[in-house]
Amino acid sequence: QVGQLVTYPDLAKTFQTLVDAETNALANGFSREQSIQAACDCFYQGTIAQQCIQWFDQHDGLLTLDDFQYHRSNHTKRWDKPLHTNYKGYDVYTTGHTSRGGVETLMNLNVLEQLDILSSKSKSNTHQEEPQKDPQYNAPLLHNMMETIKIVKSCIYHYMGDPQFTKTPLDQMLSKEYAKSIADMIYANQQALKDTPLDIPAFPKNSNNTHTDTDNKDTDTTPSSSSRFTEEYYDSPDTTSFSVVDQWGNCVCCTITIGEGFGNRCVVGDTGLLFNNGMRIGSTCPYPDHINALQPRKVALINNAPVLVFRDGQFQMSVGTPGGEMIGQVQTQTLVNLIDYRMSPQEAIEYPRFKIMATPNFYKAQSPYVMKLEHRIPQETLEELQERFGHDHLDYVGPYSICAVQGIVHGSFYASSPPSSSSSSPSSDEEMEETEEKKDTDDLDNDNVPQYGYAAGADPRGGYYAVGF
Image 1 (tube, rainbow, N blue to C red):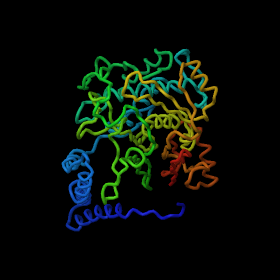
Image 2: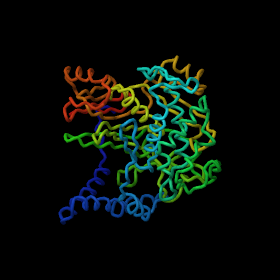
Image 3: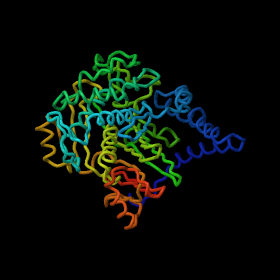
Image 4: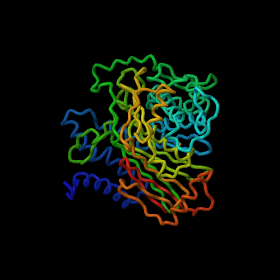
């Protein structure tokens, strides 16, 4: 009820147990890093782990103490190198490939760079058209972005899996040469793909393909008879993302999730904890001989993909979003708005979007596409996508219904939010006027702005973020 105070005493006790483990280690002369590791040991090997396993035993669960200890030894102590590409002079960094959304975002940007999207070059008309200021009216741009996302997703679901179980050819997937082969495929097709392709572009002949798994196009797409899941994938935007910049210019972009809704929908004993439901379809594959099929101790491929962007070594922007299957799609659209169309952060995150799903899922070849567009995209643009480029299964959804991006952009004191959002940093009239003058500059960099100027926007789709220094 409105005004009711909600408390979680069991969860508070669990947090206190972790804090006590850290403070006791500090009191015994351990370093800060060692003391944090002591708290992790308490969770994965100590009293909290014992409480969890007791609950799983009581309810015929699958997890054992060995699973907790295996995860502690093989995953929580590991730091993965961030993935990187350069998009039109901007260095874009994101998470390692057990989070497939980061690879998807980088691959999308590489392909769009090859397609020269600012020229709005269409497949049926290969001369360069005049760049259009407003991309929501630009059917060729939307077509190129849609086709890019379709093919990249097929590559992601074809090749990616837990690196301890398969060798994913990341260097090839993120290469500019491979991006060009995808762009060539988009130009050659002339019309929109109707369903997930049977074949995806091969790697360049001179590349060193380290993928050791059998060709997934031959995967048996009959779900396992012992599977607890169907092959249909139901997306859920129940992830959380936030970005923070401190007074010295250090930035953290964090996207965390327990899957969908309340995760596994069970509070584990007296810990107050909800575990994730990362074994769901999407994160895992329902077809038993696929490289991402559910298997003991195999890491499922979640889609979290916080992004940091730099230029000449200087922080430019952070972008993150919840949204399940839409994360890589929406972050790509937002980055294009910021980098290619020079939008302010508020414009970029409010801007109308689209999303692409496949029925029953992206793992299965020839799964029909279903595309949803926020209905602020004009009807004439939708009709051009259908008539000129052959897109079908295009449906309108609510005006602010696809994901909720959060982000920070360097170079301005301007921060705002739409009336439907719940929070915003105030800006003076002078600062807002100053920003309006800067919005049309040729580069996001601006030597005349204060050293610690940042802009942030709030998303009326439900998420919000606004901060300024």
